[in-house]
Length: 419
Image 1 (tube, rainbow, N blue to C red):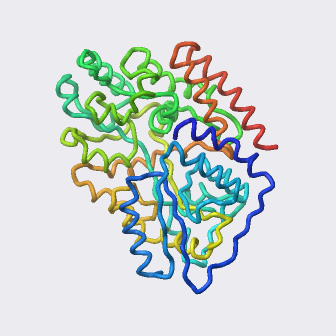
Image 2: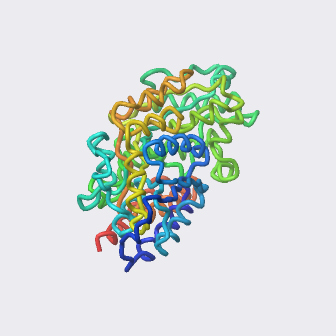
Image 3: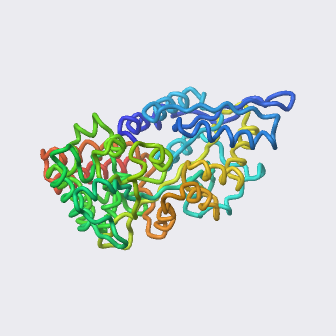
């Protein structure tokens, strides 16, 4: 998630103040047209198959699907929520679901339409439950792994990541590759202040720290483990093993990796589709994240399908939402390589789609995953993370100073959520 996007959502609670939920008039004649908006253009074609399967059961409902770029998605959604013109069905994620649900913008799931929460991991259901009401149907979930370029490892004479490798092993490999190939513009690893989901959040939990307390009331950034988890990445950047913040701003990390200039990219299973067609596809491999001092190795986050509380075709929208949460739709989602389906027992539909890689590591790591850190208004302190951690990356503040100051600022935001 880009910081600019989450910052835009941070004012949603104010702009929605006073909005009342409620559906418009039902469509006449038994036929309905609904709009479905997602943030991934690569998912448009696969979802057309999902919609076709839905129409075999419900030919009376026409679904128009649209993908908005990620850097426009949340700003557009905020505007639509404020004017009660949200799409009938749209993708939501954990950092934003609470804000939209508690401001009356989401319709609670209607289980009468066929959606059964028992088919999903309880953690996924709880992520979208507020005041005992479930507001979205989980689509899939992601843990993180290390995508790496075997050619760069070979040329640098560095061993591939081995089972049970540690943070120290990772830092040593990244540094050795940068030392050997840095003159060619190759970096061993990459992270920036805004890449927490893929990078620093994971090393924070590996190091025994936390981003936010389990009850979502206090920041964990002044915890020694959290500081250590952030410091790992800042040290790599300041040593030139990772591109600088300015370089990553100009050239996103996935672009560094697919251009053969980055040896290791910490990221999720959603990269499988693009990497299999990339110019370096034959030299791409994937490994579990390294381990640290704790039993936790990764965060876990899942997306979901939500229905607008303002939809004038709410029944049709909730019928489609229930189908998206069916085993049939979830298997299509996995087989298309869109991610690990959240539906219990169908993860193999995703891993089987990419026989060249053992992607089961992503689902296997779920046993050692920390819940993705969120609160009611996650976007507000995501902005603070970028502000203070950027000062650590640049050297304006030490990592300890930046994290301690961030914790204090974040606690003020969290305290305001209770009012």
